[in-house]
View (cartoon, each protein chain N blue to C red):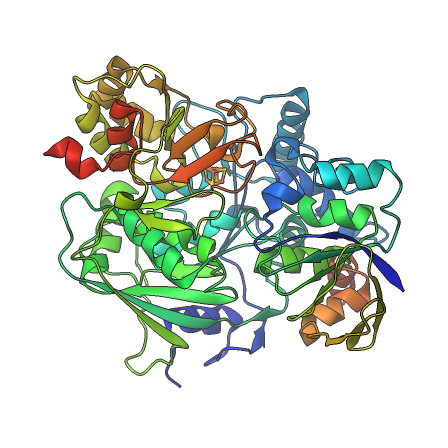
Length: 430
Length: 161
Ligand code: SF4
């Protein structure tokens, strides 16, 4: 039977010859990721074993990855205690894919997993974080789950009762305008199909724009697929996937590319032509409230944020640094930059990007989730407006329900930092 | 019969249900304290004692979108609330089922604050308006997990096999 990428991966993992949407399967899990919320997973894991005479042991410590990123360094004693509890558990269970709060190996989970080659094409990846969809960028089936579901995975090594999702094919073609970023494309798509347009579905990305896009851009697209409700957002593995894994992630050994069958059945086909696409902005307070930048030019800003698992990579810092080089962040605006990983931080330091950004007035923060989720640094005051390269603009997301968050690409964020208002990066460049 | 205590709109995110700054609190016994922490209406209901067990929250489309934080389900479960929404985001729905929080899907639900609803079988009857609505049942496997008392119990029974 003809299958999509997700269907092929899930059939392999469930050890059956084929699956179709709606089938209930129990796929084996190749990688199970958690961050600080492992504290809850651990709690639920022990709950499962309560009242049994079995001793609590994770199914395979080598398939678990834990990354501290959400609140690093700890913002409270409560977080510090959670982190301590997790460290102890990982030692007891022999989990070695553990990324501490460190300047050499630390970073945001969705950056660390690709960077260290933990994700391979064809894998089933689960993470206790909704943006686990990111790893579909490497041709994996990668999905976010809750903590109790993860506890179950730790016990059994499989995901119980997965209903095989149908797939929506997204073709992205046309001539890519110079200032357009992967971020603009995914925002446009979310605006078009809405925040629930892909709920319980997989988005599978195709087209010349995707073929020509590097893994960094693909990660942005897969990352935000969940903002359309998608269970997974997959770019079928190709030469660029292999280049990234070999050259940047240092992966050796065989890679197993999964491509869709010619006559695979898609529930819907969405075509996007980027040729005339403007930079896009997601306006408060939903991610699908997307407008072309010309409709929101000149909104006055109090804070600009560049970073997160969506847009905190080297390419993102580079474009921002080049726009801001020799210029100043507007006086009444705060600009915060947080690289997605320590590796990126050091590379950006080496390339001089951090210097350029700091010279212009930006504050360089430590790698991690930073103010993306409004817990730790960078909270907004009542009535303030932020423009961020992050992925969510829900009420309260940046720490204050009485503030507003707009979302954009790194180029738009940098151009807007200079003027203090939402500014089309095409103006800054001309 | 239960009362609608709080009617909300579409796209209620888990950032609203359980604000990020309380994420370091993880235990289901401790999360209810921070349910809708930044929402004045909810807190007024809570403090005035209006929000009793089995009270109903009515949501629109895409209820529970956003972060996978399970606290958003456990905090509502802790107050023993019932959620009726037109549709749910996937992770929230699964978390709710895993924790045994009653989440009912009624695509055309029409109920306002103060309305009394009777939930029985596959129907919701709005006693106040006299209108009846169809419940879209949980998938068979989700119902199985609910019936087992949640995913902890379900997984435990699998381990024993
Ligand atoms: S950077 Fe933001 S969206 Fe990404 S994992 Fe961290 S909190 Fe979540």
